[in-house]
Length: 152
Image (tube, rainbow, N blue to C red; front, side):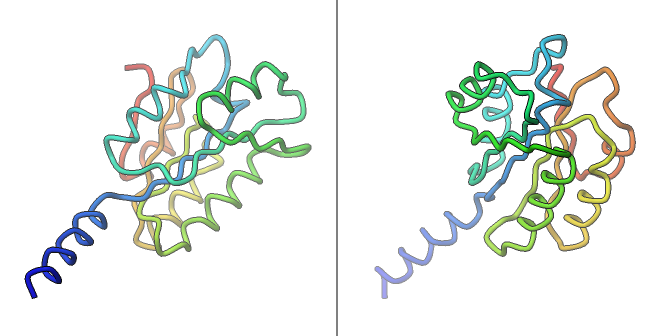
């Protein structure tokens, strides 16, 4: 009985740590003038739980150097030949139906993701938005459960 209780306690401890997918809107957030560092994003998210999915959505104009940098920082580059917004929104929304996922993180400044955050919350998941100024959408910040300011 003692071994069973110990094993159960270990399982509960593991479950307390949140499983987090992170979806980055590359063209919106990975710009030289913004100075966003993917490693900084990872470090901030690792304080909140385990990063289970880490994807950066890029358009067809992404340079080989950018794709390599994304890969080297542990993110999966997803190259989209059309609208990056739609692909990221679909993937984030689909992921929030996974019962093993507790929190959804979107890294963007774009208000197009407001409906995704609302859907995440309606399904009982935590919605986190990470972004930077300038033009960090107030609608996003007001919809999210938590805001991560990448300027700080």
